[in-house]
Structure formats: structure tokens, C-alpha cells
Image 1 (cartoon, rainbow, N blue to C red):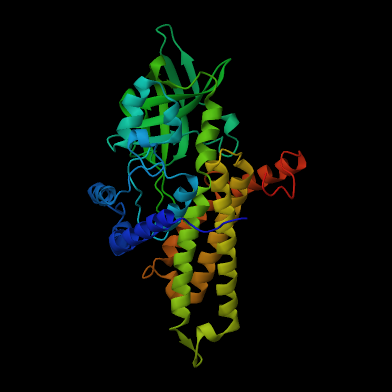
Image 2: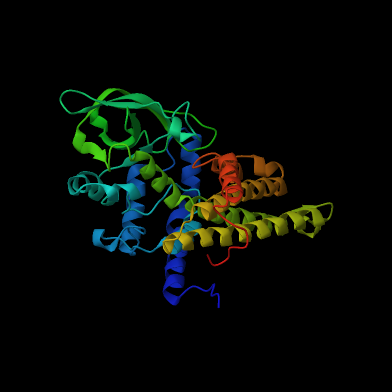
Length: 386
């Protein structure tokens, strides 16, 4: 028997987070819009820290973090459900107490210097693999790391579109070691790398990172020399289902805005919700959201149960990215001219959600992965329960 219900505890956690987002985070949306229009960050760091303090007091700290490090260890399915809830607002807020999953592969010394301070909010990381000439094809990165006579590594190269690259005080950077392969290095900002912001159509503020003869001690190799690509894929695959999860929350919020507007706005003597053209857009949006929801939760379930989730996550990510863009486009259309203005947050979401089809694996890469798995027999059709 397949049971799609949440346990009482899971339902209580979801409802508590939904209440927190509604009472503490959504009221800040007007402030975020004002700040962004003025060219400032959506929320000041102290405001975000205060939100995280309130969330921690409510029991939400380190949702994915193992209990031994003070986290909830909620599991992938619950993490996806909570990502749906936080996705209902565009306020740039995340629960604190978490760290990049590959930092757990560090030595005990590295955990003390990087993992634990990141969990506690004292340090901030960024993940750097993408380069100007190596985006979707990460195996073609050209950043190089060469060991000198002292035993240190000298890193040279450039990374681009790095999330948190302007704010991070250390980076997990992937560089090619000649005759060994891709290797991950933990590199503090004060070791010499520099960052520059990249203006984008949305409010995502990525950075380009430049490494010019940056000297890194051998003790800062994360994992093994030549084994960095596996770490990179672990980082990407483990959280890929979280992207469509957040898209679900945004799409549901947007669709509710369209439903509410269709029940108020009149045109030619009728509420626009009475017109079939509007009804079909609302119906199609609901169908697509629900499809993404179950694809996403299935991918999360596979992760949680230690099963290979790569194929399921690619399907969920592709479907979720396209769904969110279709829904926000319909919602803007339903709102007409008002949807195109900055009086409503729809146009902001329109710009933000467009990114989902590019980062963490483009639509084209997801299709390539899905098709390759089928053509090579890595995945077979009709494999329910496997």
C-alpha cells in the first residue's frame, strides 16, 4: 500500500514553518522590493540574522544538519516540504545552522576550521566550479593547481556565476591538478582570491572569482587529490531536488494571486474568472504544479532512502523549472498591465524564476541526462518501486 500522508509530526513541522514564513518573513516583502529598487540588498545582514534567531528559537536550525552537530536531520523529504514553504516568498531568507554537504568529507581539523563555524553562522562558504568556458561541461575546467617546492599549491584561474561569491569568506574551489585530475581546495579569502559582482536581470547576485597565484597549504585539500569531480557531483546531485521544491512554493503563491485577482477584476461586465481563457490558464497551472510536487517528493524519497536519485532529480528539476516559468508567465498575463509593473512582485518573480532553467544544470543538460540514461539502459521504463 502506498501512503502519501504526512505523519502528525511532519504535518506539525510543516504547519509551524508555514506560520513562521507567513508571520515573520512575508511581511518583509515590501521592504525587500523597496531596497532592491534602490539598488540595495533585499535585506540587511542583521535583519536576516534576527530572522534566523527567531527560527532557531522556534526549533528550526540546521534542517539538513546531523543531530551530532546540533541540527534537526529532518531528511530529504521533509527538507523538500519545508523548501516548498520557504519558496512561497521571495524574501532572501534561509534557515541557519547548515553547511555544504561536502564539508562533512573534511578532516577533523577542516571540520573545526570550516564545517562547524559555517553551521554556527560564523563563516560563509561558496562553491566554485563554473568557469567562463566551462559551465554545463564541468569536466573542461581550466583552473590549475600546481604544487611548488614548499609543498603548497598555487592556484590560477577564474570562476564565474558563483552564488555567495561576494559574501563568502572561504571557497570550495575546483581546480585541475596535472596528471591527477580535478581536486577541491578550501581557500580562505585572505589567501588572496578576489571577487567581482556580476549584474543580472534578477536579484541573484553572483560573482566572478579570480585566482592569481593564490597559495594554498596542502592541508586545505578537501578529500583526495584527483577526486574532486566526485565531490562536485555529490554537492550538485544531493540538492538538485530542492530547486523544483522551491519552485513549487513560488508557483502556488503566484497561482493564488491569479485566483484572487480573477475573482475581483471585471472586464466587459464580467469577472475575468468567468472567462474560459482565464479558467484554462488556472487549471493548467494547478495540474503542472501538482505534477512537479510528486516528481520532486519522489526524488527526495530516493535520496532519503539511499537510492540513486540522479535520474529522478533531473526529471524533477527539468519539470519544475519549466513549470515555474509557465505559471509566472500566465499569472502576469492574467494581471495584464498591472502584472508588468513593479507595483506587484510578479515581474520580480518572473525575472527570478527564469534562472531556474539555467543554473544547477540547464534544461538542455537535464534532457541530455534523461535521454542518455534511457538510451544506454541505465534506467528502464516501468521501473516503479525500483
